[in-house]
Image (cartoon, rainbow, N blue to C red):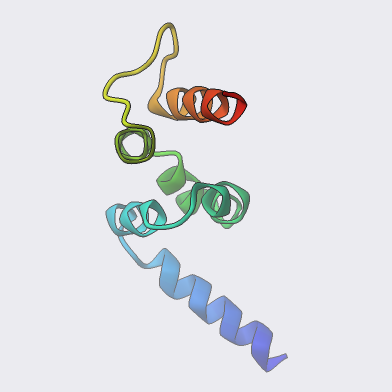
Length: 89
């Protein structure tokens, strides 16, 4: 019971952080980790993970992509499309 209480307290402290800090933290984590775990924690974490400017940074850093590709409408879509092509090729 005490362990569950500690987890709730940790989550509460996480949610007290400004979204800009959460975005910065999530940018330092592996994409797979962020998309499988962090995005589902809560709506604030989801908003931080899906921030389009954060995906722009990931595109620049991970894929060396400087602009949204083709008819895609977001940096997240660009990252997903380009990273999938990199895996296939």
